[in-house]
Length: 558
Image 1 (cartoon, one colour):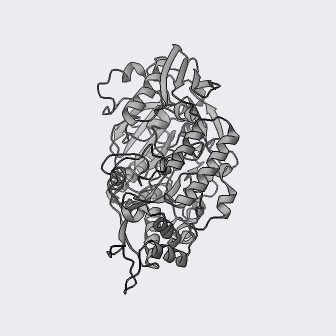
Image 2 (cartoon, helix red, strand yellow):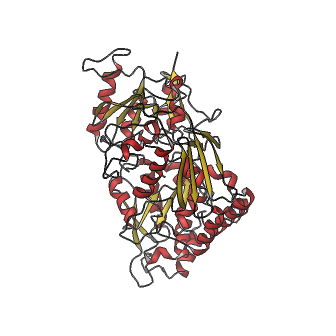
Image 3 (cartoon, one colour):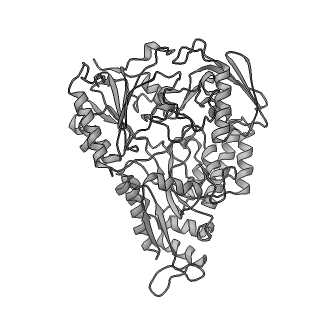
């Protein structure tokens, strides 16, 4: 998928950036409804959103780039459909409908007529074809594709090498770029695309600065009646603290950051307008152990480490009680309908059990020495790092709790916390010990288990991968995953996922910690029409595929 759903909440390590951005918002808001002296539009009609994981912005609107600016894949470029995990429904978007072949080896999309890109050019099937080809060339994936045909301007026919049930959501949620522009780029992967052309509601870049920029209305949007915002203003912050301060101060409308005691610090300051919604349907948060290292290749060690973790403490202290401890299926709340109760009932290795952990370590040859410290089978101290980005206040707290917990079984772990760029780079090349990691969050658990137990994304240490950082695979898992994609029968798929849950519980490929909350807080002071628990037409995320549903539902408060 082009958009990776990374939950990276960052602490303010660059105070000057945060102060500068706050000063900017304060200046803009001081002149509501008018125009500033330098020509920048005011914030009265602009939806203002902070990004806590970007101290500065670069003018990169390439949807195939991991460094793309915010809203590239949410407001500028759109997909043929949008899957909404909050409501469990699929919303037709650039496509009006689709049909799968009876053998599961083909899929046809019918594009919505009358859609234009922001330069006035008509959207056609050729744009879809090129977008999928670029995704495959630049980021990999789509190995099951055999051919793409465009019999007419509004029809796209995909043929597969084998039956592949998840294709609907993978292809359907591919963002679409204009072929008449992207086919001319010599190196599309390196193209920064500073003046993007897309089909989304807000595509026009204005007032771009290192710590803020604006997205104004697409003049050719196919749903002009839903462009009720004056535009979108993005603000850059180096971490949670600065972004949270902006929200608490009333300088932003919509935030997606970890905020301790949000009821007191945010909502209670203006209970009439301020609200939050944190459903536990986000990515499962795992403690991943690099299984290319001998000590973590032993399932007894992995389970022992898991049994040493006090998840209740991690959830209550580290996550402010916004989520719940994981169970032995490793599934987040997004997959509740798939969860196998029998696996949960037999679950033991995700509950804290110090004696059980010590017994497993002893069996694996990791004995205690005279000082009560665990040693490896060859007599060396059993120590390792836990990596997490220095600016993730919540995950950093969780990592420290895990390190403290491990002392109770004689293991010394050190929390290693450089910036997220360094942490992620080490994950991608496999040059790390352990780390706290987000996971895939797709319409079915297939992608989740593929990334944790399948061989497809396993790369040797030193070679970059964007999934399966812990580099674990299992033959039985591959067989089950292949079985899942080969059938469109819901009953058969459910049984396969049950078998995968059982195998996951047996192998413990990672240490599941808790389902990630879908962070979301907003104020109705300036805009109304937000998704809520009572009206879950989208998630309350401003960096997910459903974000476009929110942008096209909001309207100014009266």
